Length: 141
Image (cartoon, rainbow, N blue to C red; front, top):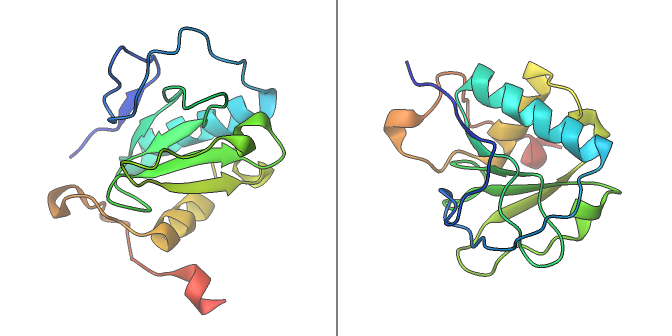
């Protein structure tokens, strides 16, 4: 069985392939930390690869980088109404970016699985989670 890969400390060259090197990060808000924490729990529960906090991108920071979902490069997660909402995704590599509401401030298995199904899995087939159905909820709305 695969284990979740959770990066909680940035390094000189981040493992997810995003540029780092900004010496000082703006503080995250309480809500942003709750969302990041929920994704770290999801990583452990659902066997996901996440980086939290991710490296700085310009003046604003995303709160989570989620690999294998949303696009081949992964998903950058920000929080609605918080400073991370203003983060600009890098142009290369092409990441999917999502601004999530406060409903993601706590881990709810069904919500997170539905979200991940909607975003789509783009990772290697050997790492595809057993719970993944590939149901695109957006197109059914």
